Length: 158
Length: 137
Image (tube, rainbow over the protein chains, first blue to last red):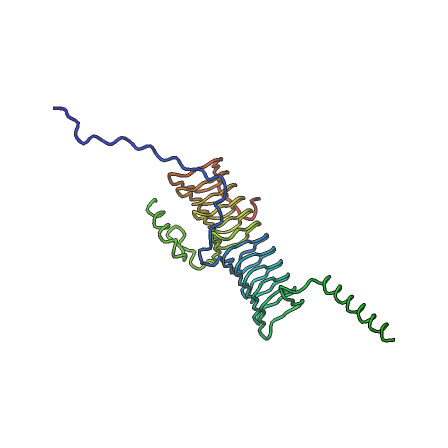
C-alpha cells in the first residue's frame, strides 16, 4: 500500500574541484597570433611558440616563431624568431633567418639574418650580418695566416 | 545573474565585447594566447585576455584570465574575470570568478561574483574603492 514509487535518486556527491599544482604544459600553437595592443607596455621577456604581433611597448627580449612589430610599436631588447617583420621602432639585435624591414621601421641594432628585405625609406643603424657567418675571432685568425703566408712568399722571392 | 554569465561565455569567442563587459568593443585588446609566456609586468588602460602564462603584475582596466590562463602575480584592474588559475592577489572593483577557476591568494573587491565549482584559497576582503594608480602591487 505504501510502496515507494518515484523514489528520489540518491544525491550525487558534488565533484571536488581538482587543484592545478603547476602551469599547464605549453600547448602547440593554435594558429592565432597573440597581440600586444597599442597601449600595452610590457616590462619583461616574451616567449611564444607561435605568432606574435607587437603593437605596443616592450622592454625586454622577445623569442617567437613569427614576430610582427607594428608601426607604432617600440621594442627595447633583442628579437629572435624564424620570421621577423618590422614596421616600428626597435633598439636591439634582431636575429632571424628571414627578416623584412618596411619603410616606417626604425632599427637601431644589428640584424643577423639569412634573408633580408629592406624597403626604401627604412631607418637602419647597425650592422647586417649573416646568420651562418664566421665569428669575428675566426676572421682575424685567417687574416693573420694570410699575412704570414704573404711574408713567406716575399722572403722566398728575395 | 547566472544567465548573463553563460551568455558572456558563449559570446567570448567573438572577441568583440561580451554581455558581461559590453563596452569593450572599442577598447584596445591584448590577447595572450596559450603559446605565449610573459615574465614581466603588463601595464595598460585597455583590456587584456590571458590564455597563456604570465609571471608578474597585470595592471589593466579589464582583465580576463581564460581557462588555460595561468597568472603568477598580482592582478590590478577595474574589472577582473577569472576562469583559469591565479596564484597571487586579485584587486579589482568588480571580480567575477568562473567555475573551474582557481585563485590562490586574496581577492580584494567591491563587487564579487563566484560561480559554483571554484577553488579559492585566501581572504576575500571588501574594499570600497580600488584605485589602480594608488594601490601597490
